[in-house]
Image 1 (tube, rainbow, N blue to C red):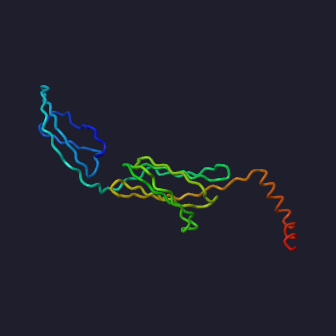
Image 2: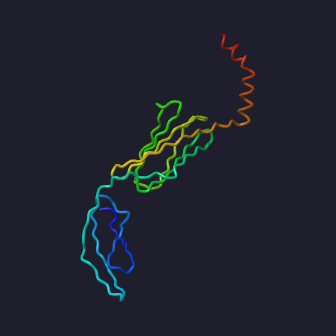
Image 3: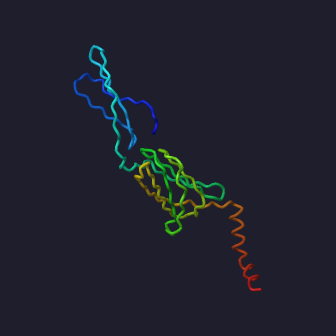
Length: 181
């Protein structure tokens, strides 16, 4: 059984015919219910307990607020992707440089069914366009996927590194002299 807790739904309008919509039920799950009715004088009547079973969920989840950011951590680029789903899902993430579609990085599937998803990865190539795909699957295997494109930032060099690079470029003829011997 899923979460075994008592829920209630109803309509306080005084009328003869009633209909109540039950939300957030699990698929392929047995439920029991009772109906409580109260008349205008406050008299109450409770039905006997009844049962029903929900059908298998065939509706894919919805992915919302899908965002990607890439930040620098020292000399390394760190990718963070976040999104929400309208129902608990496990998720897989794949990303690759758009210049090399065979260099795909696959992150491990999430270990729990969640509605708020966060992945973090590193090892991106600076100043490179990327494609990232998130696939979210609910308990019944229904899937939704979203793809987002982004460009990783360049790595800024320190002033010391810029000066050193400039000196090495100016003294490039020295390395060519030594290469000949």
